[in-house]
Structures are given as structure tokens and as C-alpha cells.
Image 1 (cartoon, rainbow, N blue to C red):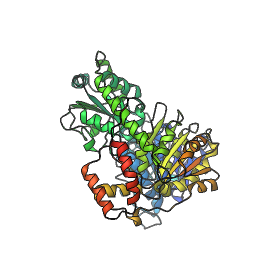
Image 2 (image 1 turned 45 degrees about the vertical axis):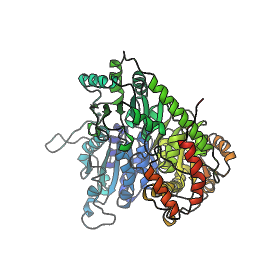
Image 3 (image 1 turned 135 degrees about the vertical axis):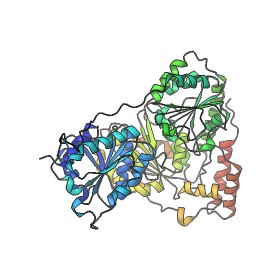
Image 4 (image 1 turned 90 degrees about the horizontal axis):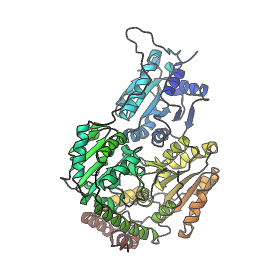
Length: 597
């Protein structure tokens, strides 16, 4: 007899869900038994912690593994652990369905082991749709609504599954009676193109500019050709959010790179000097990095609730990026694009790149982390998938890696959670086992989730047709992003009890697990180590021992930030010598003039 759990698996498959990330427990025994029976057409990826299940389910969607990510966890602590990964999906607008075990119906309300009020616990992260399945006849309409809502609103939904209900006999077709639902598993058609009158207004507004800036986010993924074509028609420069870096070829001279605190100086200049702004699929929140007030602007987003939130836009267009840009392009067909603006942007970018090259080439003790990341750029495989953790490594990624067509790159872009890098790499690799993956982590993130999830990599890698997964750990024994935030915003010296990390030999740990591991301390070895890792016959961990004093300079370093940093040094920062040693040459190379001729 088919059980409720079997029916859940079957109905989810109708929505394209065949891979589940999770960790077992008695609260989901019915579900794992059903997956065992369906293992010829489904896959359960066992991770080391439920938080990873949420991150990996998010990455499953981001890296093209399927339309919906799925996380399956047990009751009580499993449900609590999952939340952080789900919040990553919610804040980055990724459709993920959480399947969460619960105490048996017969015991609920009695203070049973692991009994939590999951409907209240999950009502924020899965508020778009959250339900407990109490009767076999509910499976069809609850699964359908969870999947439809996740896709339509690009968000997290959750089903709470009491463990005794999972084992009941299924009711595949609810009776055609009062009080029952018979629902459809056909996805809804989304809004695609705004009204033509609004499109014409947008074209007239944008045509009036001589210095058009475009800000592109993850909402434009899949519309790469349209973004480039509209930018060409307008003679525009393009800055990207961190989540939107793969939308455009970062090598193009009209692409100024990432925007924001970790972004580039040309992106800052682009926004400060533009006379028109077009935002496509981005909700980048740092308002100080947008143009000064008063620049005529248009925003495109599939979600009308996201429009006009970051800048006082003049016209908001609700629609999918690709079809909307196609419609705009048809109206821009006779546009004579200005050229002087792009020439200026190309010059600004060339000067910035020259400075960044100099910064990365500067000697450090023992390794310059910017040099380590920059040396990867020329060696990136054309089909590389890049997973980035949160910290100073994010800045080096944004400034030194030129993401280009054919690559996929992502991170926890809005929650900004440490610990997501290796779970993302696992989600990417299980989605595309035939493609190489590079994970960029700091040592804080590696100690948080990485050392444990490396066990998952060791468990899974021999199933991959391409065994290459390279994990870079920037080992500076410091929670460096926090240290620099304290210095530049609070004027406080590094708090060693809070920020100093244990020095762990991550390469040795990798070798213990049967993987390759290299501890790197000499700048002369960086290129050769990357080359070897990217051609290895198994996953590799590069433990790069880097300088903790390497400065993370924002593209626009204010006087207040400089004063606060100086105050931190005067108050006895333990790294003051290293900061002075690295600070002056790094600042000169970053902000100094760089003739291109």
C-alpha cells in the first residue's frame, strides 16, 4: 500500500523535485523510508548539519539544479537547525520547500520529546505558505500549494509532517465532496512584460541621457544577452550586485564590476556621474552607493513590491527581465548610443585594474590574499561554478575574479551568512557533477561549517563524473571582516578574545579524509598550486596562510572611516605594525593615479 510519505514524494516529483538535502531522524522515518523505495528516481543527499541542507537547497536552485529546492529534516532540533539556511533562501528570493518532521498527532500537546510549536517557529521564514499535514487527503493540495507559492513568490514554503501521519495509507485522489480539494500541479504563468505605454515612457526617459548607468542584479540572470544589448543601445555602463556578477561578462570595459562596500571604484564613479539610471532585478541595499538624488531612473523587477525601495525611481516596470528588456530593445532600435561615456568608463576601469594588479602583487606576511585570488582568475575553467562565503574573501572575489559567460557564481547575498560557501559548493556539485566547482572561504567560515561538510565532500565525490572541487581557505587566524568593521566604524582596536581564531591545518584534515590538501605559504607557489588543484583527480583543499593585516579598503574611503581606523591604532590595536606595513602601499595602489598609457 502507498503511504502518505510515498504520495508526498510522488507529488513533489510532479513539480520537478527529485533531490532532497537533509539529515535523518525518527521524526521523518516515514519520509526516508519512502525515499528509499523511490531511490531509482529520487536522490537524498545526507549532509552533516541541517543548516547545510537549507543552504544546499538554495544553491540547488541558484546553480540550475531544478526549479525548486527541497530540504528534509527531523523534528525538534533538526527543525531549529534548518532555519538559517532557509532564511538565506527567503532573503535571496529562491523557491525552496522545507519538509519538517513533527511529533505524532497523538502525542501533540503533551510535552513529548522534541515537541515544538513549529507552526509558530516557521511562520516568519515560511509565512507565504505554511501548513501541517494532519490527514492523508491533504497531501495533494498542500504539496501543490507549497510548490506553486514557492515558485510564484520565489520564497520559502514549509510542510510540517507529524511522524504518525507519514505512515498512514495514502489518498491519491481526494473524494469529490464538500470540504476536499482536487488541485493542479501545473505551474502558474508569471507576469512577463509591462504595458506598452509604460515601456515607451521608459524609453523616452532613458533616451534623454548621455551618461546612462545600469545596476543589474540576480533578477537579470537568464537575460544576459538582453542586458548587453540594452546597455549597448544606451551606451551605458553596467555595475552589478554581488548576486548579479554572472549576468555580464566582467571583462568588458563598459562593465564596472560589483557595487557597494566590497565593490569597485569605477562602479562608485559610474553612479556618481550618471545622468540616467536603469535598475534591473536588483535590490542592493546600500543607498549611499546609488546616484545623488534627482537622477531620472527606471526600475524593472518581476515583483512589484521590490520596486522603488532603494532609490526614488521615476518609473517602475513589473515584468520578467528578459522579455521586458526585449520589449525595450525593440523601441530603442533607432537609438544612436553616445560613445564618450563608455570611453570614460573604460579609462576608469583600466586605471582601477592597474591599481588592483599592483595591490595583489605587493608582498605580505606570508601571503597576500588578493594575490591568491587573482592568480585563480586566469586559470578559471570556462564552465566553472564559484561558491563564495561571506567575509573579506567576498571582497577579493568581487575585485579580482572576472566572472564570464558560461560560469555560475553565487553566495549568501542578502542574509550574508558565514558558513554557506561549502554547502553552496555541495549544492552546485550535486546539481552539475560534470562541472568544476571552486569554493572561496575564510578560515572563520571553514571552522563554522566547512570542516564538517568536507566530510560530505569525501563521501560524495567518487559519484561525480568530474571530481574537481577546489576549496580555498584564506587562513589568517582572524575574523578579519569584523575586525575591520570595528576599526573603521567604531574606532575600536581588534578584540582578540572575540576575533582571533585557532590556527588549523585544513590541508592535513583534507588528507585525513582521502582528499588532496596543500598548505601554501610562499607567493612563488600560488600559480602552480592552483594549476595542480584544477587538474586533480579528486577534491583539493588549498590552505593559504595569508596576512591578517591585509586591508579591506572600500571603493569610497571616507574621512570618518580614516579617522576611526587611526583611532583604533592609537588605542593599541594588536596588529598596528602590520596595518601600517600594509596600509600605506595598499592605499596608494588603490586610490592613487594610474596612467594607462
